[in-house]
Length: 297
Image (cartoon, rainbow, N blue to C red):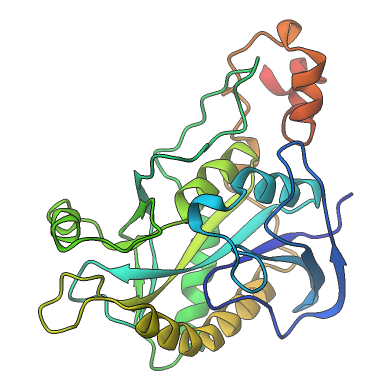
C-alpha cells in the first residue's frame, strides 16, 4: 500500500497543508486502532506526502488521548520513510524566544500514562535510542529553515521535555526543568520519536516556540490565548519550511541507520513468535521474521 514517501504530522495550529495538490483522503484501520484523523495524501514539491493532524481536525484530542501507535503504524502502512513533525512548544531558555524555531536532538520523558512501544504481548524488542532524532533529516530541515525563513531565529540542538499535560507547568516544575538543562517543553513528540524508530522511519521535530512557559519574570504565565496567537503566526512559517524541506528530499535515498533500527533489536526467538503477534506487527517486522537469515546475519 505504498502511496507516500514522506509523512507530515501537524501539531497545534497546523491542521492542513495548503500547498498540497491532487489530494485524496484516506481513512485507515490499524492493529492499534484508528489514527487521529484521516490522512490527506497529496503532492508537495513533486513528492507524494501524507499529512495527519495530530489532534484531529478541530483539535479534539488531548495529548494523552492521541493514538500514537495507530498514527505511526498507519504511516508505515502508507510506505512513509521520513516523518517531519511540527510541534508547538514552550521555551525553557532565555535565548529561545517566541516565534523562534528549534530543532531539538534529545528528548526527556515526563509522561506517565502512555504506551511508547509496538512490542509486548509475545514479542520483545529493544531499539537503540541514544540519538532519537534522525540527523540527516534534521540537517535538511535546518538548512531549509536558514535559507528560506528570513528574520526567524533558528536553533539546532537541545532537549525537548515531554510532559503529560493537559495543564501547563507549575512555576516550581518549570524551574526544575530549567535546572536540569532542558530547552523546550511540549506534550507529544517523545512517543512519536520512539515509535518511528521502532517502525524504522526517520523522524525529526520542528519545535515552534509560542511562549516562555511560566518561569520568565518578564512575561505573564502562559495562557491559551497567547499560544493560539503565536501558533497562527507560526503556521505560515511551518508550511514554507516543510515544503522547502520536501523539495530538498526529492530523489534522495536514506543513508542513515533509521531504516534498519530493528535489525538487532528483536530479542524473541522467531520460531516462538505467535501468528497473532506476527500479524499485529506485520508492517514492521515482516522482513525480519520471514527473511531472518538475510537481515539478522
